[in-house]
Amino acid sequence: MDQHAIDEVLNRPLSRELLARDLARLAFIALDGTPRAIPIGIVWNGTEIVMCTATNARKLPALRRDPTVALTIDTESHPPKVLLLRGNAELDVVDGIPDEYFQWNGTYEMTPEQRAEWEVGVKSLYDGMVRVVVKPTWAKLIDFETTLPTAIEELMRRQRERDRA
Image (cartoon, rainbow, N blue to C red):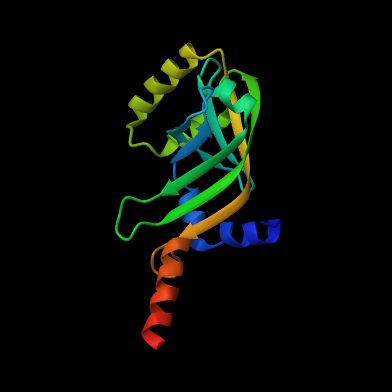
């Protein structure tokens, strides 16, 4: 998928709304060769998805071996709204806690006192983190109203052809 097509998908209002969410599911291949899909906090910086994790996270050796990933950002309502992304994870080890980690946690419902207590706990737990950065190389938006999964589009096309025959 070329960058123009990716940008067209990512710049749609619904995509921007989904990219503003805090959580996604990250899929990757684990060291044992089996797939994994995990929930993870995200921040969209306008060109990349940024995720932060502990320096001893088990996903890191797998991402170093095979950085190919997929992300799903979706809603819980009907019809679901789904943004599917693919790309390669770049790992950036940092001292301290990256700003993005505090950003994605910024929309959780916490009182100011709870937020302050949470930040103190985070700062005391982590000496450093790893930023997992993914620049999308493929994107698809599914809203089940104007866009559908490819398989459903194909079934509907076949149905129309049968109805015309």
